[in-house]
Image (cartoon, rainbow, N blue to C red; front, side, top):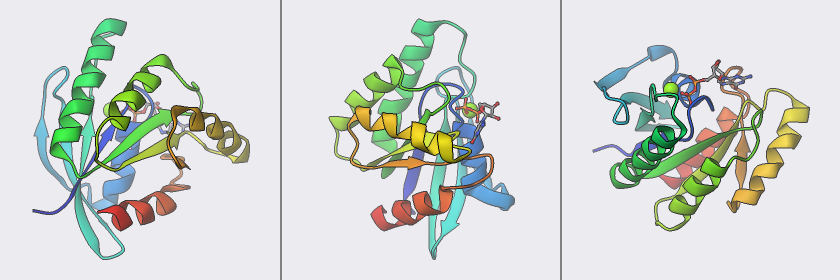
Length: 163
Ligand code: GDP
Ligand code: MG
């Protein structure tokens, strides 16, 4: 079985945009599951000679903060069970949020490698803003723009080093 990378985080931080960026032009969706919280899309990625599976999580969540919180937490626990590495996506436009802190806390208490991806870092100013996410306690943050692709090469370099 090839290694598996899960993408987790709050709704609207750009998980699906990052997923599409990581699976690239081939859009190789290998398997889909649907459901309010169990919505998961499996794709294939390839970088520096390594193949791995990427899982997008989350999908549509109802506009109820409690349902969002429990849904995101459930996705994080499934990702911890199911993957070799976790991409925890946060959003520099909305800044550090209490649900981000709760997810960071769950991720710190387990042994799988976690990379904190600060998405929507579309320009230099936003890359600087992204540093506020060091507050979540990760050694390194990866500012990226999933829309333009900037920063995703450094992120992928690190992903394949850890797999
Ligand atoms: P998800 O709910 O976490 O899967 O988020 P989506 O991938 O659906 O993206 C949510 C919104 O953020 C969409 O309107 C995207 O176009 C936008 N978005 C995603 N990535 C970026 C980015 O790198 N920069 C900016 N400015 N917007 C982004
Ligand atoms: Mg999505």
